[in-house]
Image 1 (tube, one colour):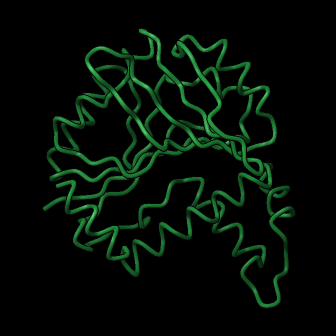
Image 2 (spheres, helix red, strand yellow):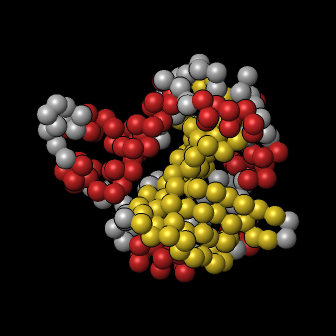
Length: 225
């Protein structure tokens, strides 16, 4: 039975670029790799200081080149080509060989919070061992059956869970609403954009985990099998 794993992966990739912008949230949109070209990753970012992030990209030894693809309402889309040093820490080949399917990856603070679908629990263990052999921190936070058997966490990342709980505690979902997203951001010590992104993604994850994925998403998952 296939399983969905949510875990924190600490890797040197983009670590320097993100070091000076703790409030910036970065989410992986796409990762491409060919035998003749460097691994290229596309990120959607939200935050207040894109200049500092871009300076970090220039200084990051895992980055060979980068470009801004789009800038829309406080969200920037970046395409990053990894350097040889960055390539050393890519785990794409391993999880692809194991038959895993990438679902999401978000970084805000302490490492990448990743969600993947694996063929079985044994393949998760193999991937975890692969990461640890290369000194990459792998911390499993949630594992549940892809057919609906779920454990605690419902696939939320740590920052999404923290933000949703803080929002409930502060009365963000009360009627009438007792706090604003700006006030919630100040309480958490992050940007308004980061809070909005976490609430949106966290809510979407909860809906998918409890109500179920839309038909087109399920069909897409079947085509990937």
